[in-house]
Image (tube, rainbow, N blue to C red):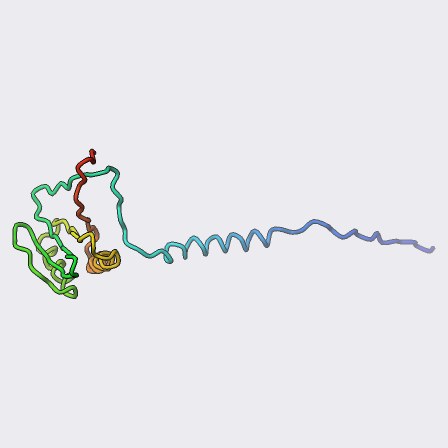
Length: 146
């Protein structure tokens, strides 16, 4: 008895298996989600929501750091006099004042002729010294209304 057993040939599957590609995509997504916040650099700045808004000090003596057009740095705390200070000592002085008065607001008063990079460098030094919130002083324009 001769058996004529024939095997059927399977046709090749023409569909692409996308499961491995989905796995790779999800791994890349996780990698980008984790690394993206590490790549951003800069200072945290909250932009004002009004044209002008006065600062409410609530009986707190502010620390005002001024940068004059000639590049000199000055510091003033509360009702004291402005004192000239070297740029390398600003972070230490402000840290010492905020240790004694932690709720004292820190404000930067820069001349409009001072380069932007100088002000940003000062703000970065203050942030590295542990001062989380630094405000910028501006002069209100006469036609601005809140």
